[in-house]
Amino acid sequence: MPVFMNDEAFEKKGFRISTDKASLDFDVIFNYLDQQSYWATHISPQRLKTAIQNSLCFGVYKDGAQVGFARVITDMATFAYLCDVFVLPDYQGNGLSKWMMQTIMNHADLQGLRRWSLATRDAHGLYKQFGFTPLTNPDQWMQIFTPYKAE
Image 1 (cartoon, rainbow, N blue to C red):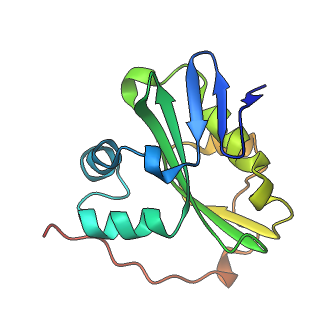
Image 2 (cartoon, rainbow, N blue to C red):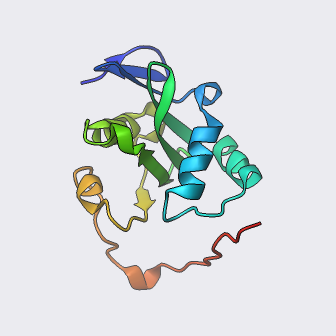
């Protein structure tokens, strides 16, 4: 179990999770999402800055360096969309994704929500541990999808 540090940070095994946006390393986040993720390739820096500004963000750090990230888009009352979840390759296999998910799901501002949503190609096993399931009625969901284009 993580050790509660203050209203926004937890420590465990030399790693730290914080919701303090001032601690985020934008270059690490941008480089991963733009160059290594399958879901945010070609996102512009300005678009990502706006997304971070308008989301509840969780950074994972080792010795002050950012090694993981997740964003939650939420009204903090009824709905949350989990996105941009990653742990840098050199730090994978240490349980950081699971710890980050535990921290997100236990965050005080995210309790009592009616619905959580996310999209994943390859991490179903992780999210299933936290109660996520395939859509019950996918025919009731609609979307507008506009992929990012290289600028």
